[in-house]
Image (tube, rainbow, N blue to C red; front, side, top):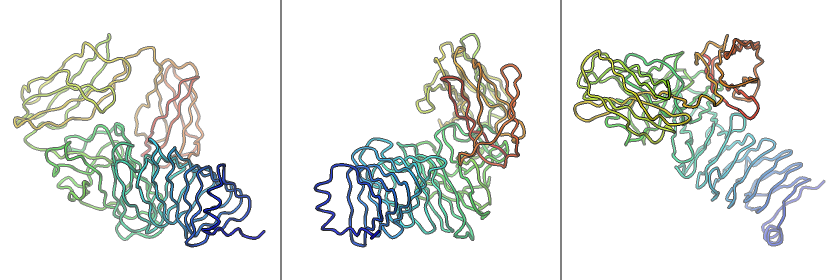
Length: 463
């Protein structure tokens, strides 16, 4: 079969007449300085070799082979676009979709070897179908209007800022390898959720209660310097911010003494270490303020009982208890004057929210400077089904799960690449013991629990 060479003249005539799908069942070659435009779905059933520009305004279904390692793509549909099928390689890729979030869904491994331009539109990926940046690949124009929600993978030895966020805010992470290799690879995902549970290192006052970055080391063991996005409006003293890492069951700063500087809205670690896992921002101990406080909120008889106990209170003025339905909007429900060192405090919320809500404690000093501690979760619905992983993080040998109002739950443990980990399951009342049939390596896993119409996916960290 002869290759089909697409020229500019043929393109203009073709696209003026085309109204349906573009289906390639042969060998389609788009030469240099040539643009092929389609407003509908592009379906490739054999071979598409692009050395020019593919201007795509519909979906892409690759059933065979597509390479644009010497060509460019522009995705600027007015409706949401989906890329699916077999893997795709592109030199330069421009996201310019005007649809509401997510504007573009990547449902196949998509590799960029040149530059990914984020001009417009939110891009969504998942654990096995990622946006992949090859060695020396770059990004441009990333913003709150255009970034990736989901994991992004980067190969190479050069420093790189991962274009991740939550669909409304751009929350990048930057990794700077030391003496890296082109084969080194990291995957980063921004997670807008309460960070995994863990105690705090003695030199930390608190950590973020609403976000973290999952940084996975896919290849290599090179030390890295880490930079995480921070909001200037969320802190009165950025110099006290630290990049912190969950090591085992404790959150630890990469260095206690100081951070590594504030550059372009990022807080950097003050050291390079060969580590990976969950990262977030924390604040260093200020000797004038109260030390980290154990805070609890528990539901009983339709009332939420909050309690905490302090150590040395220093110049603490008062405490504020806040409540939120979504970890975004917080409402003050009570404030208590500081009583002095080693005091115990209790208060009751007589009107808790229905369903799931969150409580957090904020302490304020005599200068009016306040800082919130890690929030806790309260569920006010005894009839609702629910699950809870006990002892998370875990060593991976025994996983205990508490269930409520589930008759016959089914459990599936998965690696982030989608591969299942076989389990041996035993039940003791509402508690289930899950024993992996094969040893689990350290890292992040997904535990899916289903029972009829109920379904929940929880993150499980193995150390």
